[in-house]
Length: 379
Image (tube, rainbow, N blue to C red; front, side, top):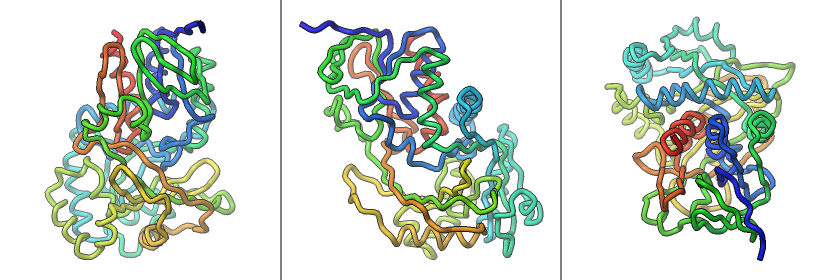
């Protein structure tokens, strides 16, 4: 007989969703143990822009959740000493229909508390020397967006939680079975008062029948990273082209959006078919993060497509000018998504909560969501 180890709160997964729930529980005085099957988190949490992106969330609870997450990111970066840059964002408009969406969004968002402003081309140039001003009709400026380096931040956060909140992390520890209150971890038995399953895109392993009936699916995205920009060049705010206006739900209520989508369907069918929108952020090393595309399903071709990356680079050159676009790395990420929902939360048995399906907004929403879920579940 082997001894059963115990903890008050068990969290499965050390990506951003698991970290957020571990932090929220530990802040409230709970003993927390996190189990991560890999030696370090290597999933969607490190394969993204590093954008904390309130501007993409619609007014109301989701925007408030994003802003709370922003506060926590700034706090954790101060504690952990990792790169965290509140540079804001610019959406650039080169066509009248893009500018119309921006103007309508400002009219909607300002009364709802967003820190947004419509800028002229000259005002945009003052914000970022990387913005192409030739043909620029205007831009949407938002002051809330924060950039982290996800590779650095996701590696640093467990150390912060260990040192400041006494969270116990077990890396290289695979949870293969849950039967509340017990978990099987690398063949050992653990018990917990409550178990949070935050296992990301690897959602088939635990409770497979529940996931099969849930409607949850996956999205594969392609991204790139440049070499560090020469001479310490910085782009300032994160930059977005007009395609991004069709991607985020924050812009869904703009009356001009259907016409913009119709033009993109006629003129850029490749981008529309592959759900491409083009953005650029810069990390603390001076590297530029570029992307991305979206392919939906449960099983994906493991090989990335060169034509997608070529389109992203071509479209990017239409709105961004930087000293160096030499590509140092390409990759794809896969995240869980529940169509029509902002997250997937389920309780497969008493004492177990599944949190998944943040649909690519994990960096933006996880810290705020973690607090909400912990308060609702444990208090």
